[in-house]
Image 1 (spheres, rainbow, N blue to C red):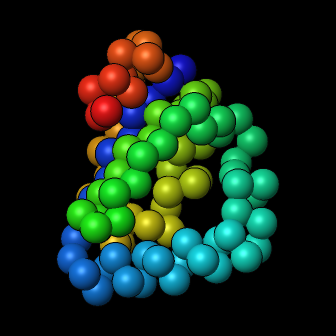
Image 2 (cartoon, helix red, strand yellow; image 1 turned 45 degrees about the vertical axis):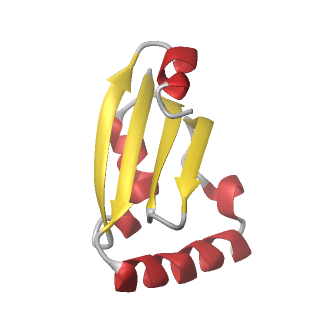
Length: 93
């Protein structure tokens, strides 16, 4: 199933902490360490606004939360099913 994940940092301090967490995540292998069955199809991150969007293909919400759990304290995360990748990405161009 395709899901649209929208996220926004709660404030500047959370965004700074998130940047450090992201750097550490990449240093430890980043995308290679994503949960099995979690396939990113598209993503947009707008650092100046502290928000972003990802479209992922995955088998369950549980798989999504295995990836996003560490970030829950820092940002508001919304997960919605989406039917078509091209239509969903077009909304954010």
